[in-house]
Amino acid sequence: MDQPLLMKNSILLGLLFPVFAAGQDCKLIRETDPYTKQTKISTGFIQLEEASVTIDADSREIDLFFSLDGRDKCFDNNSIAAVFFEGTKVKMSYRNSGTMNCQGFFHFTFKNTAAISSLLQKLSTQKTTHIIFTGNNKTETKVELMPDQQHAFMNLASCLLNEAKTLIK
Image (cartoon, rainbow, N blue to C red; front, side):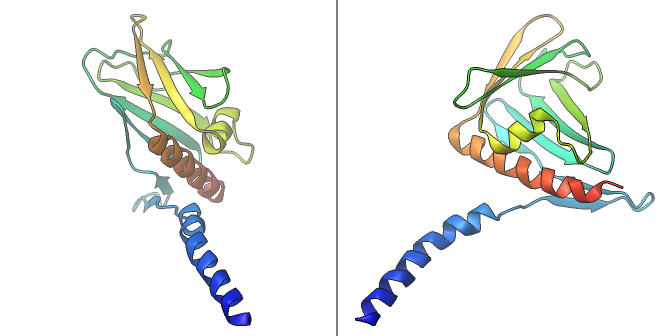
């Protein structure tokens, strides 16, 4: 009688193992500058529909760097990105913190502190459905995140934020 129960439990445990293993998968890139000895961590580029994003952190800041595909994607410090999350109509808007460019580069930059900003917190706990980037000529570019991209982006953001706290000096 104990044998079938043991077999059922081991099968159930075997089926659940990949779920728990995937939840702990944090593949971040860690580099140390040979001159300053500063450590930097990065998610590496995550490919989205018509864009890619990387999240980098060092002891001072956390930077979300978007590279949008296509031509004439001009952004300056007045350009805005509206971030939309699954299950809510509320959006969060942020200004470009990068330099003026027409290559489709857009940055969100935050101080790396123990108190995590509300956008970073949401990115790591809620799925991002899409982001609308408004350039300096008022043209909008919508970047959709597919369900698998939403999950990967959220998990990598969570991993990076947890690791970024260890870099604070």
